[in-house]
Amino acid sequence: MSAGNSNSHNYHLVDPSPWPLVISFGLLLVTGGAVIYFQTDSPWIMAIGGLIVLYTMFMWFRDVVNEGEHQGDHTPIVQIGLRYGMTLFIASEVMFFVAWFWAYFNASLFPTEQIGSAWPPADIHLFDPWHIPLINTLILLLSGTTVTWAHHALQEGNRKELIQGLICTVVLGIIFTGFQAYEYMHAEFDFAGHIYGATFFMATGFHGFHVIIGTLFLSVCLARSIAGHFKPDHHFGFEAAAWYWHFVDVVWLFLFAAIYVWGSY
Image 1: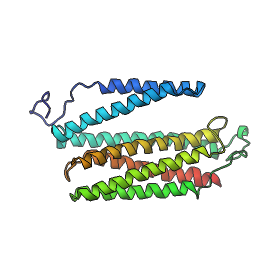
Image 2: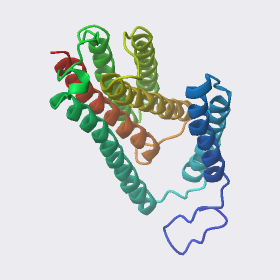
Image 3: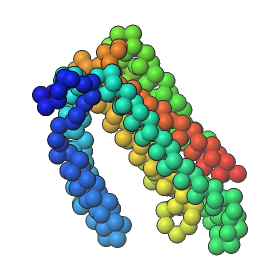
Image 4: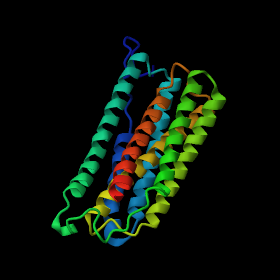
């Protein structure tokens, strides 16, 4: 345990940290800067906030890694709490995406006169679900396989295959993001002006954001694996990233089925 904590219990009383306050300030700049960007096309405040968030993530990750890997603060009791916390976090993320699916189905199942009483609206040119969306689906399914491969390698003490599996997963995540960006650049509809564009870009855009976050998580796990971190019986940091990645995979399957396939007929 760290010097500030007593050995009389198995719990981790965290030391004072500046990072919650710093990342809150960075997120304020990101959200406020996004509003300014939408109004003036000036991205600088949002970009500065994003850099602050990335720097804070790196420093906060460093502190948590030190607590778990070097200071011994992540006891079995603490790991149970971490698992509960990650489970509740993913449950909250599920409800977050339920909101976007609700908005989409509310508009599509009960189209109003304002959009011509038809879904999709007549002036919307949709994506072919069997081109890039299908490719992205296969990419994410494959990435789910590679992260599971990496997890099994870790459990068996095979560090070489752990690193190989993580490299494959990170590369696949980057490829998915690239295809998603390419799709957005060639969309024949935009975010503003109609409910289809709003629901499409909010649902798929937030999913894309989660893919980027998951790729960052797995990149940290890759760096830690190369550095010799993680043991077969002590690797919740990796498990949490893998849980998150599988969640991202499952959400995409619902997006592909509901928005791309069902929504195109």
